[in-house]
Length: 428
Ligand code: CMC
Image 1 (cartoon, rainbow, N blue to C red):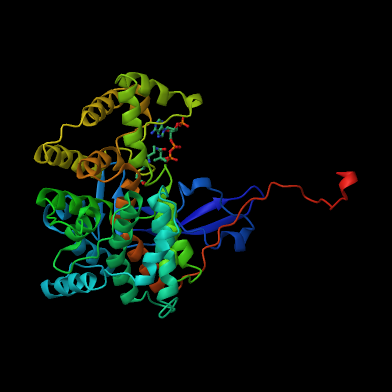
Image 2 (cartoon, helix red, strand yellow):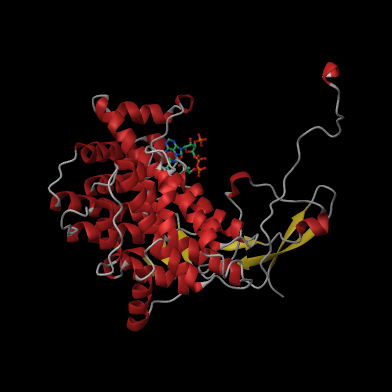
């Protein structure tokens, strides 16, 4: 018989709960039948101690700073793989053969255009609209163009996954073009994924544009680093929305919305804004570290801390090294990088940050590279979304293919009035 845990309840009842073990030795107590057997539910606001699924996509060892996609260390993927190869790996569960990768890349290249009518949507957004609002809206609108193959039980449409991967960079670049009042650039089938994105962002119809290979390489690495991170807020959102059998475009739009917030992907924008604030204030990093320690200040060091990593975020290490390289290559001397390094050192040597195990996360240095690339600050989270897309697709696919999947529907402990009655206005 498999291992069980025993739970003794206040009424003396003892419930046997199965123990589940993952491939890396992580252990869980399966409480799925607890309520049926005992009337008790578990309570875990923020889901800090709740496993929502079994998943074979990504592994994180937060105590040792390890991140694996389908078992492969993130460092190896950044050194040898490309974003599209990594996307194939995440979505299909294995590295592609050469011909498979070529065909994946070519299919994505040939689906980069948007329906011409989609262009008109952009006219309806205010010029200063946040690009994440545009990204989520336009992605959701694709569900009205691709009404076929939606919500088919048991699978995620391969074609819709290709469409999403192919069209997200176009949608993102056009959001930028709209904000600066420049003509939209159509994708070019001669260019590879990251080159094409940079071309649509920064190219103009009146002149030749050739993306800098160093920028292309750095962008590819950043997208790999963002590609998946197991059950984070946006991925859990995608899985939950998918669990009601919603179509994939709407699921991904929901992931984009969840990513937007400052505690999640929105932190990369806020890191740069924080560094600028420190710069304007005279560069006194210690003052900001002190402020972050004071709960009443409402201020946190953006780009610091993580729910899972209680050690260096391995992505932050890679980005920091890349950051130095890209800035040197582009001959950008950004004083914000010096402030970031000073701030990092001050925080890492501070007892509060040491005790709470708060280390720089993926967002701490990524903004500085994006800034050097010319990406506007409010579009940093869009870059994160471009990277996270294959992870969202992989999780929606894994969820959909799980034969025993059920709609996600957490329970609650009700704390409102036990009984109340409607009253007319003069008695309220
Ligand atoms: N600055 C100052 N104090 C912090 C910070 C920070 N950045 N992060 C956490 N703390 C404190 C927090 O006040 C709490 O203190 P106490 O124990 O006294 O209540 C303790 O550390 C634990 O924090 P928490 O908020 O309970 O931890 P969490 O796991 O719920 O939140 C987090 C994780 C990432 C939301 C949080 O660390 C944070 O707000 N960081 C800044 C925003 C950020 O950089 N987000 C990007 C995360 S990585 C990329 C991504 O997921 O998108």
